[in-house]
Each structure stands twice: as structure tokens, then as C-alpha cells.
Length: 487
Ligand code: ACM
Image (cartoon, rainbow, N blue to C red; front, side):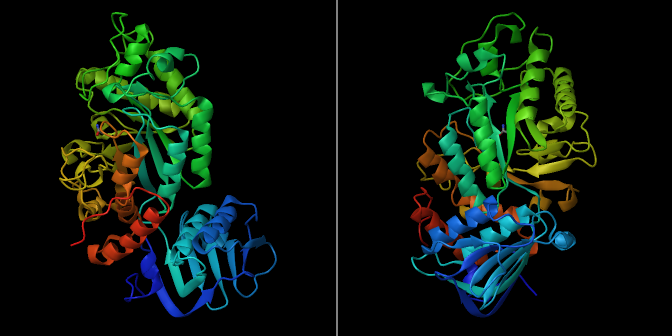
């Protein structure tokens, strides 16, 4: 059995490509009498079921009733089978569509979510077309961490935009939202007991543009909305560098007690927290305590990149403090690859972005998130004539965003030491959400397949028409999707 598809089958609408797709003869036509059947282990009010009903309606115009009755002809059934966990893992599923009905089975709710994402992609998404191709799909992801990062520090994007960002990424089974919440140009999360961080530090942005910040309630709303889409939020407070906004807000974070001015440029590497300043340890403690309290996910991101004005031994001491604080609140740490120089706990994740040799310096056994800039940095232009974006890591066209293997980046680091992949969108040059969409889509769909689909099943020629289906669908729902010139 193989994941490669014969030409013309309707399952060439799937991104990411499943592990095993076996087309069968015939099709299922969803009609006015079809229902969504919540079977074993599934509450009919479960968001997985509610989303499935809404998504079938968007795809076909049909509103299906939910029921817990046994499935009948034409129904879509979803059920949990805990005994299938050895086959499906935490996120895998089995989808069977025949002439009489469809069924999604998984060991977990997350697996059901992924299976229903696949099912929804199989509709033609043209009005009044409820036909699904008969097919048997067995699927599970290559990597558990499939993320996108949004920098809300250089330019701020509010709750509604972040919720939309989540909804779009979840279409492609992406499951980590890394929020870059602080940098030299802005502090974007209210922290109890530290009103100046937002009172002062949230007012600025690159180029003198509007700032802004999330209240604790805003953050919890994002976390909750992400959870409904099986996306885990990974909050980042970048330390000890990239901290001018905090230093400008709180005199006691500075060795001389004097706050530097707010910063609206785009240089990096000039700011640093100091452990010897009177408020630094309390600040680190309070920030991490609040993030831990408000974040259900296992990981907190502490930054650690480009601390060029932090003395090396002070940097190592700082990273050790961050790791202790994260652990003391029951969480694990993730940091940019520069933290590889510090003693790291086995569960700490190192996020590779620029120099494989730096990442490779991590303790043996360390695990990685792969964000190689020349393939995943969403702030790079697609092509030289793109209006938005930067170019320092090169142009990232769709073939470049797709054509890399996470296991071929760092010597000796294969799948067993890779938690997954992530594409960051830095926003120095990104002002509007229309530009966010233009830089993210469809490149985030490329990343989704890099993170999900086995390397041996992926080819650009096979992917390209499937990607086009999704570019068209995204455009149809109003996403400002990038369209490469036809060749
Ligand atoms: C980074 O791009 N400074 C991680």
C-alpha cells in the first residue's frame, strides 16, 4: 500500500498528504438526511463534532444533524477506540469512506480532529456538492511539533487577528502557535504587579507604529480558541537580549537605575537584562510564573537568541536561571539555538534557526525544533519582486519552503531527536494582517506537509497541484494568499 495517488482521484485534494491512501470504487453522497454520529467516547457537543458540522456546511451548504443513534446510510460517524493507540498514536486516525457512509476512528480526540480535517478537505468545496470519494486512509504525523510563530512585538496584532491565524493554520493540522510576545520594540502581555511593562513598553512598535498588548484575559481567550483547534500556545518572552522594551519600562531592571528610551528601529543585539540589577530575578520569576499559570501547554519559550551584549558567562548563568524557573513551575523550556551552549535538561528543546554548528553544540541527546531560516522564515520575500518581506536569508519560493528534510540539517540528528518543525513570521516589515496572510499562505501549507508527511512520500511535483487546490480555497474565503506567476 502506498501514499502516492493515482492521477485524478479526489484525494489529490489533501494537504498534508496522509501516510496511506487507498482509493476505492464509488463514492458517498452526503445529503439532507445525513447526520454526524457521535459514537463511542465522543460527546455530540464535543468541539470536534461541532466543527465538523460547521465545516461540512461551509464545504457543501448542508447542515447535518448531530446524533448518538447508531449510524445509518449516508451518515458520517466518529468514534474513539483507545485500543487503537498503538497504531494511531496521539494524533493518528483511520478514515473509511464507502458508498454507505463514512467513519473516522482514532485513539484520541486530537486524532479525531485530524481525521475530520482530512474528511473536510475531500469535499470539492463547490456549492451543493456533497460527494466524497470512496477511500481508506490510515494516517499519523511524522513529527509531534508542527508550528507557526507570530511576532506580535515588532508590530502588534490583536486578539481577533490571532484567532484567525489559529483557524487558518489548523486547516493543515499545524498544532503549535508560538507567540513572540516581547522584544526591543514592544512588550505585549500584561503581567500582574508590573504595570509599567505595558504602561510604557507596549506603547511602541517598529517605525513609530501603534503598539498594543494582550491583557491576561486576552491571552486566555487565545489559549482557549487555540485549544478548540487542537493548537497548543507556546508563549515566548525573549531574554536576556531583545529586552529594550522591558528595560525602558522598569528602572530597577537597569544596572544604573536609568531607563533607556523606547526603541523603534530594527537593529538587534544591543539590549540585555543583568542578573545584578535589583529587580531582574523577581521579574524573571513573576513573568515565568504567570506564563506557566496561564499556559496549559508543556513548553515555555525563553528566547535566548542574539544576546550579543550579554557577557558569555553571564549568558550561561541566565539561561540556567531561566531553566530552573521554568522547571519550578512544572514546565519545560524551549529556546533559540544559542541556548545550546548552556547545560540543558534532557526535555529542553533547542530551536535551530541559523547555524547548524551552533545548534549541534547542544548536549548529546538534546532534542530540536527545526526552523532553518532559508526554508521556514516567513518574513523572507517569496521572490525578488514581492512588495513585502525581507531578503537576508534568501528568497523563499514555494519549492524552497517545501523542499527540505528536517533530518538533513544537523549532523547526527535524525527523526528521533527532532520534536518537529516551525515557521516563524517576524514582523519588522509586516504592518497589516493582509501582509501576514500574504507571507504565510500558502507557505505554511508547505511546512505542514514537511512536518506531517514521511520524507519518502513527498515530491514537489505531486505536492504542487494539491497545494494549488488549497491556495484557491484560501483565496475563496478571503485570505490574501500569495500566487506565484504561472509558468
Ligand atoms: C531569530 O531569528 N533571532 C531567532
